[in-house]
Amino acid sequence: MAETDKKNQPLEGVDLEIKEIEEEIANTKYNKHTQFHIGKLKAKLASLKEKQEKSKSGGAHGYGYGLKKTGDATILMVGFPSVGKSTLLNALTKATSKVGAYDFTTIDVVPGTLEYNGAHIQVLDLPGLIEGASSGAGRGKEVLAVARNADLVLLVATAQKAEKEVEIIKNELYNANFRLDLKPPDIKINKKSIGGLSVSVPTKAKKINSRLVQEILREFGTHNADVIVREDVDIDRFIDGVKGNRVYVPSLVIVNKIDFVGPERQVELQKTFSGSALVSAHLGNGIENLKSVIWNRLGLIRIYLKRIGKDPDMEEPLILSKSSTVADVARKIHRNWEGGLKYARIWGASAKFEGQSLGADHKLKDKDIVELHL
Image (cartoon, rainbow, N blue to C red):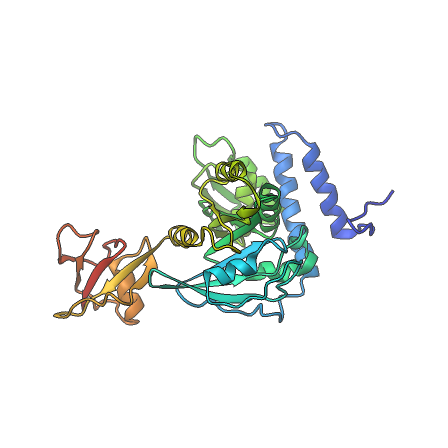
């Protein structure tokens, strides 16, 4: 009997190959004897899925999906239809997103601006996802194409079904090449025209070894390269590094409609989703705390600028990431700052004393006051 998809349509070609490989991987127990075979299967699967994507991709056209990033950061709200994303957007921003107690109220990407701690944060309410979105169901590919530009993804779920909804959303995002809350694998691949494969892996690595690296690369058609693996990555992480098209972005679970459940369920949700935010967008409960959580999850800091001989401007801070340096401040306000910065005087938590003179590499902290000397 021929293999069929969820719509009972017969599978053929690449779709059938993918189905067969997925079943073989699922039915093969992973151990030292099978790891090379599984590695080759997963590499083959990744190549086939990329081929499938190219053959079915129609691009993300219209429907507001050409929105550009604006402001100091961009966050996206992703969730099932009717989880209350539109109401949440209206509570967080000055946007006016249509609200209704039925599925697919939002059929477009609706933008809003969250103003918090002097920052202007772009918030995009994406159309509701459904299971199978990463394969194109419910215009899922168009929706997920927008998510690739995010600085933070908000996974919005309902208090009644949060566990199941978050699981499905994360799975759809993973299948669409998102790697939530992860850093890219620390590997380096320099392809060559000749010389074969030269592979270096950590001596204490248990999940990966030189032979497995070579097997996977050959499956991808790479036969000549210098490869350095600096961490003990598993097969999937190594393949992610080889493909190089994964999106690494932080996420935050927001459990909405907590007014529909009792205190015991709320405690259970807090334990299940540590670091999440529990809100009732309709009643406005938990919104101010959510703004604070978003700010911290984005990892933003406020830097106040001071002109020489003048008082600092404490009204409009410069918004930067926590890892920012004096050089980043100079770069943001002076395009041609290179080589022109002599030093900066710093007032605040990052300075040992008020008005300390520091160089371009000095790392700043929230609420620092910076006076540039160019």
